[in-house]
Image 1 (cartoon, helix red, strand yellow):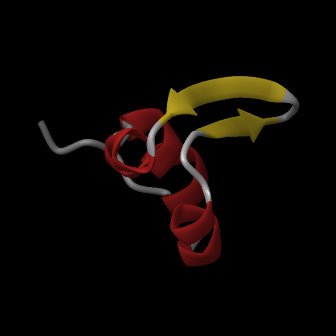
Image 2 (cartoon, one colour; image 1 turned 135 degrees about the vertical axis):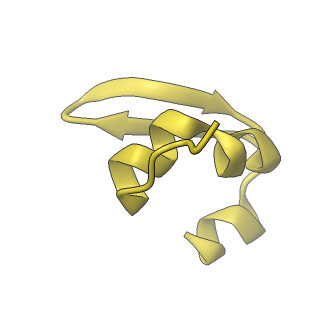
Amino acid sequence: MDAVFALADRISVLVYGKIIATGSVDEIRSNADVKTAYLGEEDAA
């Protein structure tokens, strides 16, 4: 992910062929759906 974040201006994240998020690096890093899908984290809020 670090390589993608370093090279991309906008990112789309897919899960099973469906886009779950599109945005800037900061938006993707902070997106709860992306964290859950790829890092197994759930938002504590």
